[in-house]
Image (cartoon, rainbow, N blue to C red; front, side):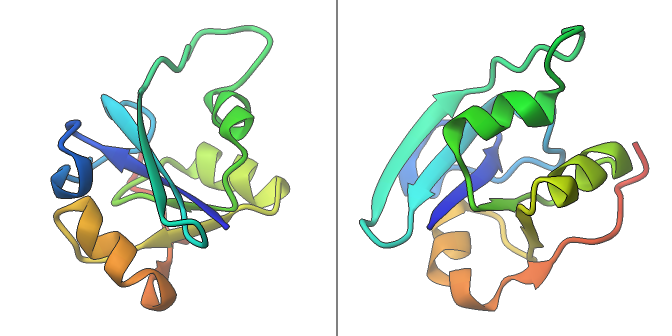
Length: 112
């Protein structure tokens, strides 16, 4: 199972979570079974005529996406792709990983 998390910085497990998914500076890609962490720079192209940002994120093949906030359009696009969206009251990546089995479903938009 691959977890994708929106981050504000690149500090390993101590990385701060981003308040909004699409414009975060980094993403963490964490393999839950293998306990393998990779942090990647967010290079999403929001004006691409061919691929939405969600389509671009799907290249990393996440099963679950965690975010503190996400727009309604992105929520709908992830739902179409059967990707689980999760949220929680956490500040750093380690807290998300440590609480993976009890994350809340993200269903409401942040208003963007």
